[in-house]
Length: 61
Image (cartoon, rainbow, N blue to C red; front, side, top):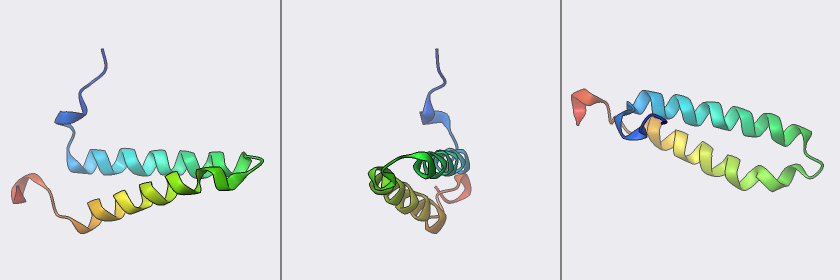
């Protein structure tokens, strides 16, 4: 059974999002039509920015 994401820290969520973003950007470079992932990449970049701008750490909950 996979681990529940409910127990992940904000730092881990951000790290996972950044890893997915890097994977999407790498995949996009190899696609015949690279614009097909641009929406997903933009959405992930926005989500990562939100995590960076929002201090949601355990000390400030």
